Amino acid sequence: MSNGHVLDDKNHIDAVMDVAIKDGRVAKVAAHIPSTDALKTIDVNGLYVAPGLIDIHVHVYAGTGERNSYAGDNSVPPDGFTFRVGVTTVVDAGCSGWRNFEDFKDRIIDRSKTRVFAMLNIVGAGMRGGKYEQNTADMDGVATAQMALKYPNTIVGIKTAHFEGPEWTPVEQAVIAGTRANIPVMVDFGADRPTRPIYDLMTQKLRPGDIYTHMYSGLRHEQDPVTLGPSKALIEGRKRGIYFDVGQGGGSFKWSLAVPMIKDGFIPDSISTDLHITSMNAAMKDELNVADKIMAAGVPLKEVVAEMTSHPAHEIRHEELGNLSEGSIADVAVLRLEKGKFGFTDMVNKRLDGNQKLTCELTVKDGKIVYDLNGISATLWTAKSDLNEKEAYRWTTFAPRPHAGANVETEH
Image (cartoon, rainbow, N blue to C red; front, side):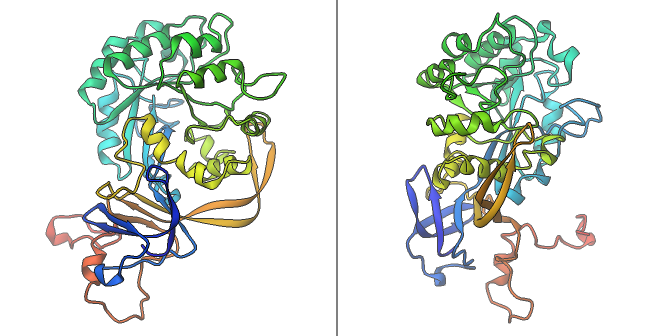
């Protein structure tokens, strides 16, 4: 890729550079790489080149047929919502627990082109509705940790969510599991209860490196009612090394929090969607739309890209991702920054107008082109054949499959 503006937070690159990819890895990032050294050159002049985006809060345990369940009909298949917005890696945030993780792995993780990690729900049965999620008897930190340790390359965290009771049981058991498996805990703090205040969560219960999602929801005293900046709980949590994640979802992001808190300097550590069947068609829409909102509230593009690449990679302890270091996995998002008038909405259907919006032009995963909005990687149909074209074509997912005689299903 030539002439693109590279934004690579980990390597402190913010400049027009060329990016070379070979055998699924980043071969070189430099001011000028001769096109004669490449099988194919894609001109991305005027576009931004970033590491593949990482969305650490999605719900993708689809296909079980269970109604009103995030281990079923409330989840979405990942591949339909990732590559088209530059996302190459997602983390399912607690749809499965230790009892049904292996079904989730077989059904979705192992069959998806998107790289799918998982945070295990502290509820053994997973995120399947009230009668399961309120069952403290099924919150077993030891059993959850055992499953996490069985699949250390796939399970990257523990999730507690939606709890309505007065007890600390889900948080305490999640921390037990996270400590035993040496992975972070992500907290959706559920119903607001005076018996378990957010200040105690931040100062006593969570550990440095744990993640608080839905940071701009306003449902659990995230905002100081006087200053309108972050509450004392969030300030103390950040001092202790707790990470704060957007997780917009269907009902967890309000402009009345995001704008003054960002103005006060309390910006996200990571930008995520909380993707599910409701949020995808409501205010949230997709990863880039959430990023647009954070920009509209005053965070610069360079920082917003970091919050979708190197930062989430660090939070889930997979720092081989989210960067364009030489030798790293070649996951790349090529983004266009459009200028104009755009409207961005929140959970209560209030709008903030912005003048810039990101769209994804091209996505590369593991060195292969997996999405190309305007065919910038394609040759004109009238062009003469190039000697390298056949070999270059292999490094896309668009190459036709072998004919049926090769015992491989043909592309239709």
